[in-house]
Length: 92
Image (cartoon, rainbow, N blue to C red):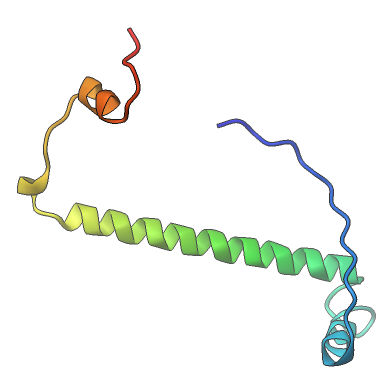
């Protein structure tokens, strides 16, 4: 799989009220993060990890379902049959 070039992005977000207060409480000397950028990067990183974990859990469930099927439901296929079924010409 080809690796995509890393793209830098600048975000400008205006937060007011209780959300602003919450962010302020988590940033600086009294918070867990040195600055807002660090806090936002961590939130995005966590959300990415959550999305990846959900995708993995779905894949695991599909595989578990497939492997739970009785052997009689499987059909032996050769590579040429699979390639033809997927609409690609076989490489020779």
